[in-house]
Image 1 (spheres, rainbow, N blue to C red):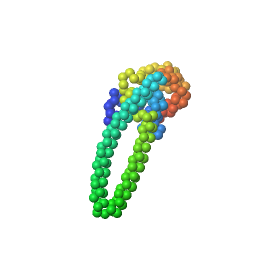
Image 2: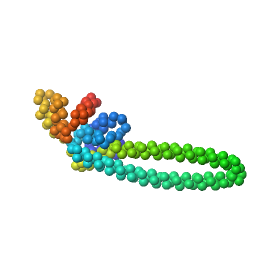
Image 3: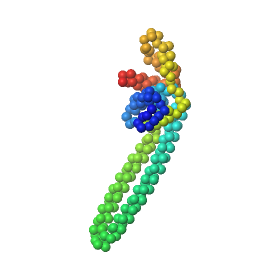
Image 4: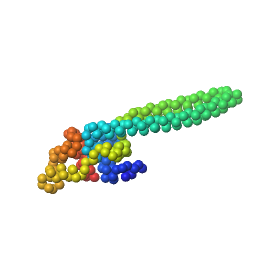
Length: 217
């Protein structure tokens, strides 16, 4: 299925389920999640994962980010070379123009040179500020991942096991003693722990809150 211009080997159901879970966990609405939330995202998206599998997926995500960052860095270096060449050409033209102007009017040339120097300094400071901001953002992004980065990994065959609806239903039916399609929160907690890596109390509470928003939406 296609999502935001990129095709993934995932079903519409898998993608929509993950989108809901991702949006719920993304409290700051930045379109990015911290790596520490990867396990919660996987479980909320219906994947039966162990801690070892979570670490494996996390490692692949980080490796992919490093590769993408290296490619981007090389492209920036190529752009900077072109910019520097253009700047050098402009500087040479300005120098030649200033040398001609000096013979005609030294005072006017000095003022013009001073203004150009001030302008260049302002531009330099602005560029430095942008570079610092970019560097800070790159460091921050190293510990974050997007939903598309997640899809690229989770589509890999046998990367993890998705909880099959039949397995969930069978476990649910066992505890649905009245047969009315309802079970207690305590029993739901036991089912989730039985199907996958045990959830902590806080993880279950957060999952249950997400479950309520999905059922209401």
